[in-house]
Amino acid sequence: GVFIMINIIGLGYIGLPTALMFAKSGLKVVGTDYNANLIDSLKEGKLTFEENGLEDLFKEARSNGIEFKTEYQKAHTYIIAVPTPYLKDSKKLDPKYVISALNNVLDVCEKGASLIIESTVSPGTIDKYIRPEIEKRGFIVGKDVHLLHAPERIIPGNMIYELENNSRTIGADNSEIGEKVRGLYSNFCKAEIVVTDIRSAEMSKVVENTYRDINIAFANELAKICRTDNMDVYEIIRIANMHPRVNILQPGPGVGGHCISVDPWFLVGDYPDLTNLILTARKTNDSMPRHVLGRIRDIMREHDIKDISKVGLYGLAYKENVDDIRESPTLQLLERMDEHLAYGVKVYDPYVKERIVDHQFMNFEDFLNEVEIIVIMVGHDHIKNKMSLIKDKLILDTKNICLLEGSYKL
Image 1 (cartoon, rainbow, N blue to C red):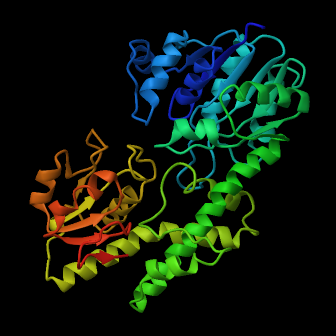
Image 2 (image 1 turned 60 degrees about the vertical axis):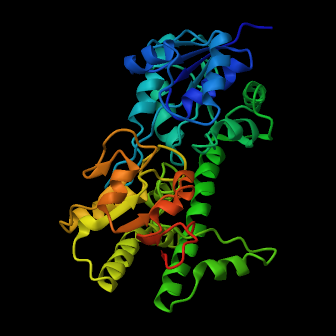
Image 3 (image 1 turned 180 degrees about the horizontal axis):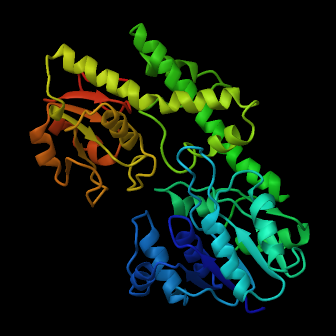
């Protein structure tokens, strides 16, 4: 076959597993990242984050000759998987990393190369920022380079499985090129791969995450309603979900991560007059850390505890069994407390190995010795297996994983 080389740009949570998957399937792959330390570490065979099955995949990809470099390669196919941060205040997407990666690709790419953007972008980003950038350089889209968007759809903690088994969407201007790229991804993706136009691909990704955000917001609103009248929200959801067409998600202390808590804002930003439901859902989910604070206050009052430093938050990650802390409910909660000059609450997460907040403990036993109230913010397996160690504490369980008598719920 033709000597295909894929240059994958950005070796973070999405780019690295994707690069390894392509290499495992026997394609010639070079992973590029501007972070020289990261590249050195990968060259030495050291992974930069933990993930189920990533070690084995890494070994396989290395034995298939995957390379890691800080320089962009002359290639026929590029996958751009750099971060797309959003501006805190306006919630608008900042495409600067994508644009800079794009320009570096244009410096070296072969004529007729395919540029696949995997980074999550807001609907319209590719027309608004990417196309003009390519044309500004004197390239003709569709001739000198082909533009595609293949939004990632994987969740930390289960990435390898989901890369292989989740269906994919590929947005392309030209369905023939779309089909070629579909063939490329089908080297490892066993699920259905849909080829559509670029704007539909951009929009579908944001719509998927917004759908989940709204469903979670409904569950969180139910939790608040049930709390005011002392009803058991979990029992009510359990029964309602027995209906064949009802599937309510579980309430929680807030929504974090880099998808569900971010993407809906893109729609709110672009269509402010049309996004009533979406905006309300976002506000509802953003209000949950404050609701948790109110519950902590209830427990402190009931037990006459005056000292906030007796409170321990278990979990810093945004979901169970990962070390990803982006936008996590615990960080949101600490921010709320900070606004009110409330300091001293203790924090522990078995997955988070370096200190990122004040009063963060590195040892679970030390953490337990210092607190009277434990707030379970994340349902790591670690705590599920250690319930016996916390049975003498006051427990606020925001994840409904604790069966101990007398634990408090949302």
